[in-house]
Amino acid sequence: MSNWQIILSGIVLLVLVGGLIFTLGTGRMVSTRSGEFDTEINKKTQSHPYLLNPVFLAYIIGIGAIILYIIYLGFNYY
Image 1 (cartoon, rainbow, N blue to C red):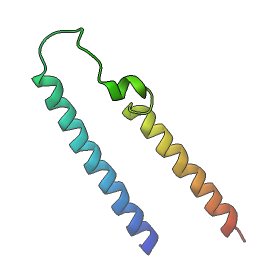
Image 2 (spheres, rainbow, N blue to C red; image 1 turned 180 degrees about the vertical axis):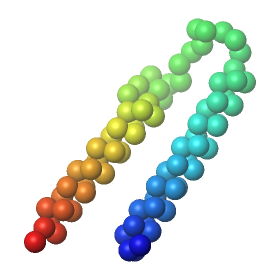
Image 3 (tube, helix red, strand yellow; image 1 turned 90 degrees about the vertical axis):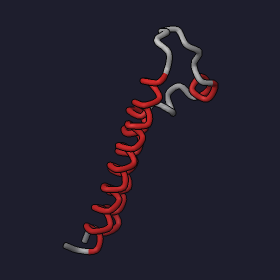
Image 4 (cartoon, rainbow, N blue to C red; image 1 turned 45 degrees about the vertical axis):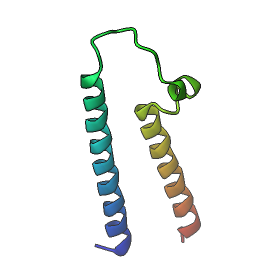
């Protein structure tokens, strides 16, 4: 394996571990809440409803990585 593959594998592993920790923390937070359905929404989430959504963040980061890879290939194409 080249150095780039090792570095990218490490980054992927860090993202996966970070996502697992975030998911477990969110699950614990939801399970400790009261059983009410109409709770108040966090102020940060109200001001940035799309940016704090993990699905949108995954799309944004993924599309950004693809764009950077295309630019990289564009500059290194023989």
